[in-house]
Image (cartoon, rainbow, N blue to C red):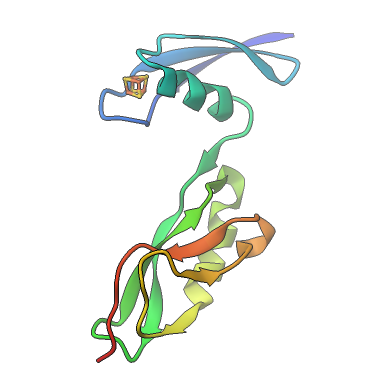
Length: 122
Ligand code: SF4
């Protein structure tokens, strides 16, 4: 059975309105996108939406109490709150460097929690 899904692209500030046609769990057509990135977004969003989770992790002995992190790669949208629960419980020691993996396989999603900022020792 064919379904039409209305989507707003979140890949850039233009926010193009798109329509994805889904048949038997697969996207068969995308319209309304201005560029290839929009089509790629719609192809995933219509059947298996994912998100990058950005947050902060508590850091001991640093010049600031927290360090910025994100998930790499994106996680299934339905698992975002599970990943946030895990992130809330992480504690690391300074120093932390951009790209440091602070936790692997967060909540069994396969995504790592990676530092996106530098944090020096006090
Ligand atoms: S389709 Fe392309 S131009 Fe339109 S919002 Fe998405 S990324 Fe931006």
